[in-house]
Image (cartoon, rainbow, N blue to C red; front, side, top):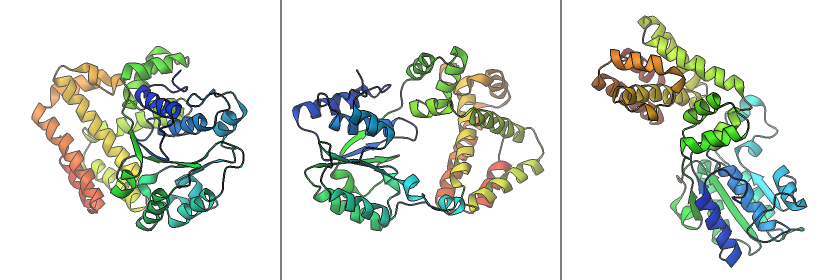
Length: 338
């Protein structure tokens, strides 16, 4: 009864009610951290708008719902960084950092067309926070005067868009789900209890991320290897730390910034767990598969030192975002590890 969505009941209820009483918006902005379920909610809204059954309640079984689910409905168009990279070489696609004006103009061309067979035309734009200035201005013009037969859905990892764009949308800010709810959803998919508990803890309430990991066991193994490598930095010689910093800096300069930020997030998360363990709050620990090592770290490092280093990792990430020299930032971080 929740549109086939785990959690975010408040958002579904709000959308459902507006559709049933005819107060739905022509433009929506669905925001939240990556993997939280934004894409699924946008898809379900498109189905609710065009389901052959009653409005506001997608059946998920009719011809229109199934075609929207498959991405083959002529009146539901989806664009974003993925579609923008179609036809590019892998290295060219990796260098794509912004949504460009051409992507928005293709949208505008499609929006000018009336529905082919559905009640409404629905346009879903992923990665909306990556709109460059030119594309943002073009999008704003579309949002100012959208056709009466069209619904526009912007999906973004944050609301860091032009304020004028945000003001023209009905905003739904999705929040992380409780860990127990994510775990229960994984168990319902026949994931063993221990693995479900581990993925739920790692997910940080991102239900989409947790489900996605079920199909990517190699990423689970890679995460474990990364944690092991980070822990080794605290035990090895300074040369090993410098080599780690050099490799991460090389990745950063090579366009793999998100990979480096993921390393830092993982490292900071470890020290957050150390703080929680030392403070006697084990229920909030993320790395529940390494409780013994967390207890050892909590016993070895005074709370002020652990807190100081966790803060320093966050500062390093901010310095990188402010165009700090990656080699110097990362080397300084490694040199100050406890």
